[in-house]
Length: 66
Image (cartoon, rainbow, N blue to C red; front, side):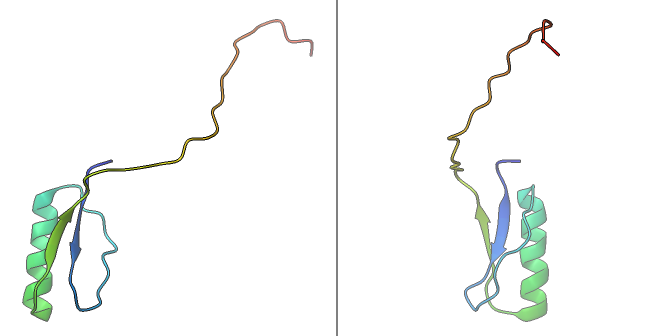
């Protein structure tokens, strides 16, 4: 899953759940604002970066010496 959504608020609560759909995140934001008041924001991931400095290359062979 690369694209995901999170719910965030400015008053110290950190997002901890990755929503796979915008609808799920919006429902959570609505639930949280009804429970706690204030403003909750739905955030969308826009990019992913990862380090890939190690690569394995498999060599298929049937003539192993053991």
